[in-house]
Length: 238
Ligand SMILES: O=S(=O)(CCO)c1ccc(-c2ccc(C3CCCC3)c([C@H]3C[C@H]3c3ccccn3)c2)cc1
Image 1 (cartoon, protein in one colour):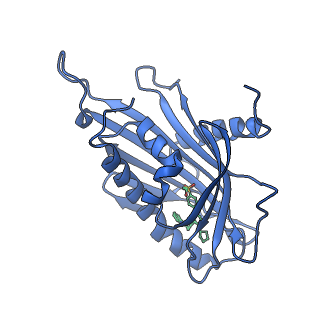
Image 2 (cartoon, rainbow, N blue to C red):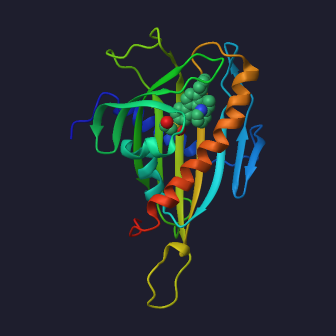
């Protein structure tokens, strides 16, 4: 099919984000700022024009779900209200393809910052794992801010944030006994979530860092618990 005007950017950024997600946290000044069970959250303190844009990288291991199931839930609009607690409104403003959508969403106001909205394309794809041949394929969802002439930034109501986010999932299967089918307890999903959010307009660094410290661990824990709950009584999707 004829590729969309955004396709070259979508392809380039998705590949860049996959590479970035697969880099460990050993190098690059990552500092651990939150831990909860198997979840480890790291950030780097960075500012752009005096605004806090701390990159975040979270690593988590979740049993009982596959990478495809997790990425589908993260990507699909119909599940988002179930796990995205800070969401106030969400619209799909363009269906580029079955695995690429453009979202406009407003987030609940976080005092004292003014309310934010985000306009971004979201792309999901499966990639062969070239670093580990006998592992399952990787699944990735990449969200990246974009523009749309009907939805200019910074209306009277919202300040537009600029974000790049990726969710990379790898599925591991403990082989069941001979002639036994794979059960959910034999499946483990390794999740890497990376995000860089530019708040768009001024917000005090101390406030933003406090919000990030509070919101990100809650967000990933809520999201992964939602996935487990959504999938537990359904056939496994590899
Ligand atoms: O992964 S996604 O694509 C999932 C689709 O929804 C995503 C994640 C996070 C955001 C977002 C948007 C606004 C803010 C801030 C900036 C100043 C005031 C609001 C934050 C910061 C506050 C951090 C945060 C982290 C997680 C959840 C909510 N809040 C995050 C948007 C999209």
